[in-house]
Length: 167
Image (tube, rainbow, N blue to C red):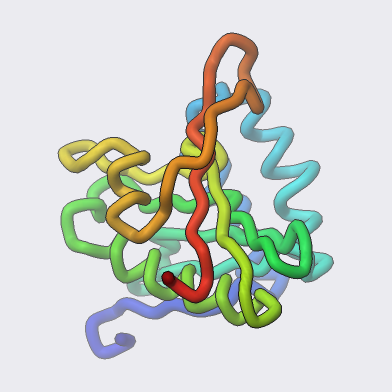
């Protein structure tokens, strides 16, 4: 993909981790600035540095344009903690390509069988003109398994899961 200026890779080097932090801080999710910054700086990035949160990133000509942060929560469950595309790149099918690579990486982390889980506010996808997040993840074989107040009092998050292997 480098022929076109696009490349993807696991985030592993200190420079890549700094780029990830800058990218995530610049693209605040729906939690609000202070809550998002605290999660990025105090939870996510230290987990990436320790190798506890495998992370894929996509760059165009050296500029990060997307990320996908995973977390193994049990031997048979991998959670997508963050899935984000830079504004302006959401209409180029990058999200579908990113999701395919994210699912490949998540499956590789699972013991033979299991599930990939997510919730619609632990992940953020810029889909200004596309479907809502629940519809988007359903199109990638996720099913809704529940709703709960996870992060913001009074706001329900949609909890979704994808069984591996697909049945």
